[in-house]
Amino acid sequence: MTSDASKLVGDKLILRGLLFHGYHGVKQEEKTLGQKFLIDVDAWMDLRTPGQSDNMDDTISYTDIYRIVKHIVEGPSQNLLESVAQLIATQTLKNHDQISAVRVVVGKPHVAVPGPLDYLGVEIIRYRTTDMPV
Image (cartoon, one colour):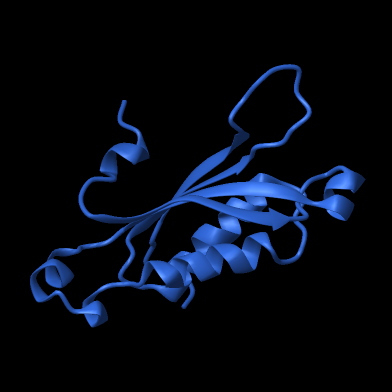
């Protein structure tokens, strides 16, 4: 049995450990006080041309993806981390047609569980489809 993740080979842009304060969650205190969210993004695209040209016009700036993440995490409250991740993935694919797939990890480092942890969260992988809205 082959998972969809096995298709994800090749070049990608990598953003790790993006930290933002947001108001996502189902509990009222999460929506009122907010909390920190830790985000990782992988964006698959062919990097041969920018690798050869050394020209910024041939790639996507990490800052463009960073701004998408920041806008969503610091934006309107979502109940679920799944929704936050989906919004990031969808907007990234919508804004950058060179990207064929995107992986988004959304973590909550400060959760009320009885024991030490780095974070709890979700990971999603989304692929560009031919019927994707522009």
